[in-house]
Length: 235
Image (cartoon, rainbow, N blue to C red; front, side, top):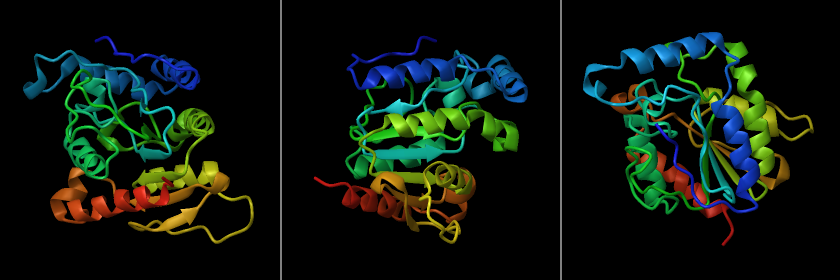
């Protein structure tokens, strides 16, 4: 599967170079084996699909002021389609909310050539490979940490980070917490916390099926998070 590229600008070139490193990464043997096994064996409903089966690059506007950080690609979502939060139900929830808040040009993300584009928004994850049972090991989080750190540095216009889930919240806090001593915030939906560079961190429950099917996360709850993000970004 070829990964489509848009016309580049001087701002996007460093981000593109970084994503090429992401796609070529093979540091985590367990994740390499799993993502390739899933891509080979597939599932019945996607038996005719060509799976991406590699680390999934980040996606969005290199000049974004909003960064969304997830956990990792889904085995039959982004690991199949090659684009973050694309082709699974978590992505259905996320992109509907981004569309309603004015950060996406359409409310659905099904495949890499579906016409989706993001405005003032960039999406990444703590880890770029699909993990077994959606669970990352500490060393796997550590191995991918450099990519997240470098992305945050390259997003020079960043004003708001939305962390989807506690793992993402903790990862962002490690990278951008204020150097002064403060109590470490406890993860909870919709809490806000100041980061370095005048950036605000907003926590959200992850739009996983476990959370959305049980009602722990509802559409209005997710909409309020991105509406708040929009309010925090100056015109």
